[in-house]
Image (cartoon, rainbow, N blue to C red; front, side):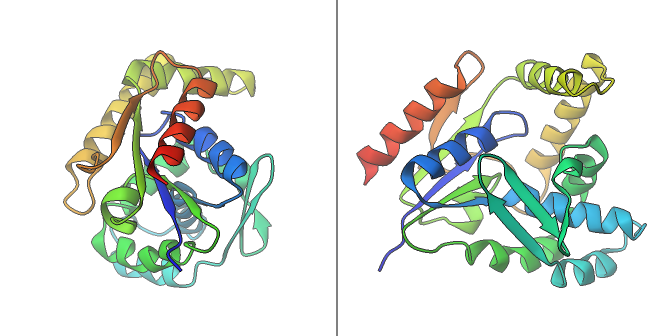
Length: 221
């Protein structure tokens, strides 16, 4: 049986997580948040105070990564049975994940972990190289983006709502730097696959994006 896959790729802050989880729920499909895999590895690396240049040590940690995903109304991620969900969005975690995700050796270890999520009745895979590298033969591929300014504004509002001090200018610069790093890396750079549907969410509501993605799935199936 050919298990259908919907990939939703794009830069950080474009709304991939919210859209992907909602679509997975509507379709009653499995859900893969590949960014959480890399961010979870980043937390494990940070917790062990590993030098970010020590690729061998990072690969060793990746091989022993014990992750669990609990996808209810909100995604709960557990690392070695410990809930690390609240730590995933931090800037330190995100920046570390972006650095270690550029190492081909690390990506190779985590690639099979992601492929294993393809199970019946279907999978919604959310990430940056789902349609280009992990599931290149996926039936439906979406590249979801938004301007750096809009993504920074969304991030700023999220942090302020949580009572976290934030600087909009700094967040914008960090997002632009992360985009450049992700787009320019040699292994699996951030880019839309040739057969992906391109959606710019800068001026769209989440519900509008979800509706557009659901229409694509139904049209492709």
